[in-house]
Length: 199
Length: 199
DNA sequence: CCTACCGATCGGTAGG
DNA sequence: CCTACCGATCGGTAGG
Image (cartoon, rainbow over all chains, first blue to last red):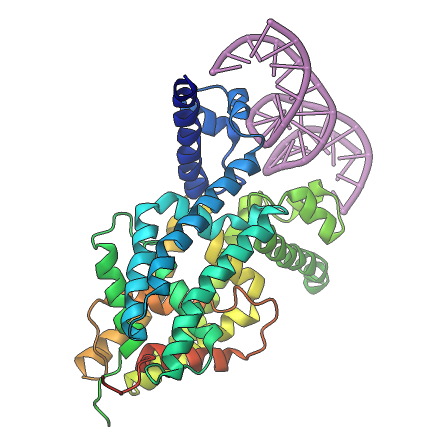
């Protein structure tokens, strides 16, 4: 009986969230209206408010979901003991896998988080920092163990995440798997594009 | 006499464009209204339309300006004959210099161009492609001359531009010069972060 | 989940 | 460059 109630309530809410991710990802949070969202979902605009208290509540849930999924996916691997270069490569594969499997929500997560208000904004930034620090820790350990030469951790992290988060931005359809893309980016960042040839 | 007329007309229009870059960069194009812009400039909203025909006209001019400045800045260097690795490094310095000297407009250029409508959108994309191809050509030449090892040009360009265009995103104030940042990114992309140590 | 509706704000225009 | 104003649309609420 409780199940029956949830069965009616949950899919609609999840559907709203999914379509909102699509709408906000394609048009942007500000430009995508609740009426447009309602039309996509197939209900009236007012009915959206039976599932979410506000437009921002939808955005914050999308961002929180993505933050949780990124963290949940990376944590087992972050705790593993392995060579830092191999660990970094695997973490990049996982990160890009999460991005590719949530392309719309990930776009919102990367682009639209700035429309969050407090306290959502601080929560978001904190989760993002925690995630970033997990990668930072691997880089630091790799440096102290002699695997990595890192001049500036902040810039290295910036290059790492920029490369990963915008890898699927331009192309409409991904011709490559997340793993392929991850490995190609990993190769560039780990070995560089210079050959050994010296002139 | 003609000068006197221009002297009154031009600064106000340039001021609107500058403040619009700031507004659209900070709040986003959709969320930044013409009334907010008017207030920042210090005139009434209706008066903005004496200088620009529409909100989108302001956005398109900001984007066109940036596209022109990027192209104009890089072209002399792109035509020079020099070692491709050194050429790439210098081009990265120039690119980041343009970004840093136009932080707001560059933010709009990177984030808000998608709100352009035709024909502005196609013009924008074409200019961006031309600029991208200039870097692509240097990479290709470097590869064919044995300086670079490039598995996938599209991904390499994506890593290159993502790294550069989001380098100043997180930090409020830039503690580093454009040249310093460019050189650090260049080092990562050219030599990688791996040491030569083999296990 | 819908109908009916709210005040606020939007981009933009007329006319001076 | 301003006052005065337009229709459209916004996020959201009341009440059932």
